[in-house]
Length: 166
Image 1: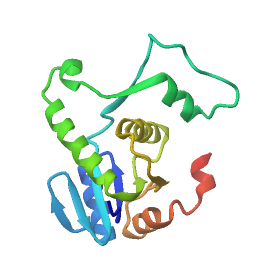
Image 2: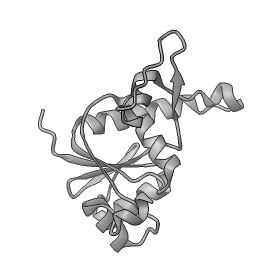
Image 3: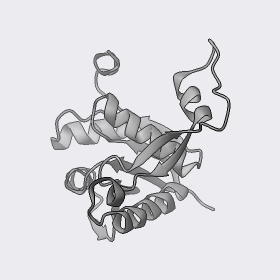
Image 4: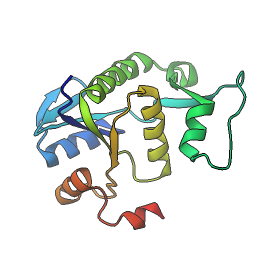
């Protein structure tokens, strides 16, 4: 399969619309925007949760990266908002996740454009392990949604990476 897309993933449709406009992905489809070599999609919030695997031994050693600790000890499932808060959201979330997975599979790179803080990174990491299709990932820290900041963040990453790492 020819993986010729760069897929940008963010948490909300409004943010995806803003990013898509800035990078020229102006073709609107059900669950994503497409154009200029990019697909821009959204998760509808933190829809993937990490559930501890209590039936298995907890794997931990001093040389493990925190991401590997998460990957080895948790399973990643769609959060059941219907049971959690009592409203019908699961069908919509499942459809959007299927769209994200299809785009992910057609992409040589996925850009994490989730909220620029640790919860946004955690939501993306959960999604990455849920999708379970290895792909190159880069981070677009977007603390402001101006056209210039979006274009730079999506194409090159953060302007001052150290500021965001802190």
